[in-house]
Amino acid sequence: MERQTVPISPALQAGAEKYRLKSAWRETGYCPIGIVFDRTPATPEKFPFATWRISADWMEKGAFIEMMTPKETPKAVSLSISSHPESTRESENEKLARDPVKGAMFLHPNGARRLTGVRVTAPSSDSLPPSAPYLTDHGLIKFEVGNRWLLDVTLDEGKQGATKNLEPDLPMVIHY
Image (cartoon, one colour):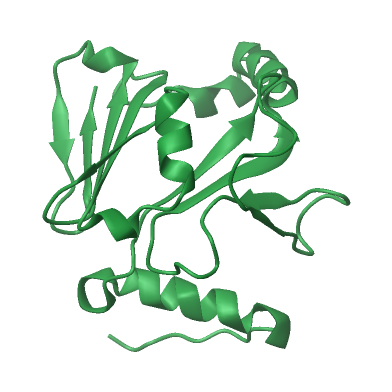
């Protein structure tokens, strides 16, 4: 297979290299998992751990992604939160879902509708950022240490009783 290349601006070189290393997770040990949270009214203005912000040309003016994984731990699971309030997005999505044409994007063929559980397994405790206990304590996600990277997702509390294991292509298991 021929490798494709695209031009990358100098300002985005570091991010592109990190993405390449994460894509080769089996060889590099970098975590292939990234989770982005939405802000809610309960989201604090400042977290009890260090964060840093990323902004890009494609984002709306003033928008950013707040990274909850320190730059100093590039191999760790990537955790972040968007700058947009979830309440705005939720109401926009509810309106879209009622539209007979545009609402189709919310209808997954497997019938699942809601994300109800997320668990990340890391190969070592140092693969988890300082934000991990905070997110677990707030009931947003579970973390554990195991023998490999794995993202375990549950949709609709698993009411259909179905499980799809995407390994070895992706370190992910989906229950719905």
